[in-house]
Length: 181
Image 1 (cartoon, helix red, strand yellow):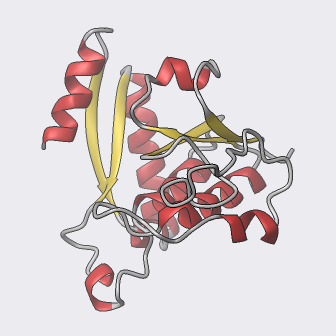
Image 2 (cartoon, rainbow, N blue to C red):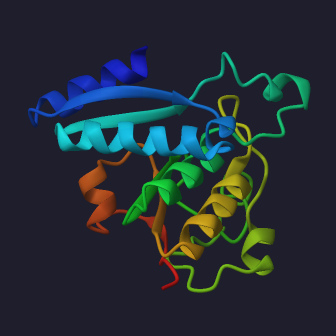
C-alpha cells in the first residue's frame, strides 16, 4: 500500500494517474488471459495512466510451496515486458547494477556499465544472494534481462535510490543491456 501511494504521489506532480495490476506468472500461461492483460495495460496507457505491475503474492503460493523458486518481480517483469513489446525495461534494486563480484561483500568490485553479450560468464558474476525483501538476487535480474534483450528490448539495472530521469539519461551508475535486434 505504501509503495503504490509513493508512486501515486510521485506521478501526481506530473499530473499522471497510476493504477495497480497484480499478476502471477500463471497469468501468462493461457493465451486468452495474456491477451486480456495486454489489452488492460494498453487501455491504461491510452488513458495516460501508468500501470504499476507487481506480483500478486496472495495467490502465488509457489513461493511458499517450492522454497521460493519463482523469482518474483524480475521474471514477471520479463514476461510483461515481452508481452507488451516494451522499448525499455528498468529493473530497480539496492545496488548500482551488475558488478564483477558482490559489491556488498567485495568493496572494490567493479561495476559493469554495459553488457553487450549476455553469456554464462555474465551469469556467473550475478549472485543469487539477496536482501530480506527479495528472492532471486542479481541472478534473477540478469535472467530477466536475457529474456528481454533476446526480444530486442533494452534493459537497465539500477539502484532504486536514484531518480528515473537520472537513470534513463545515464547520469548515475547503472548497467545497461542493449536489446538484440
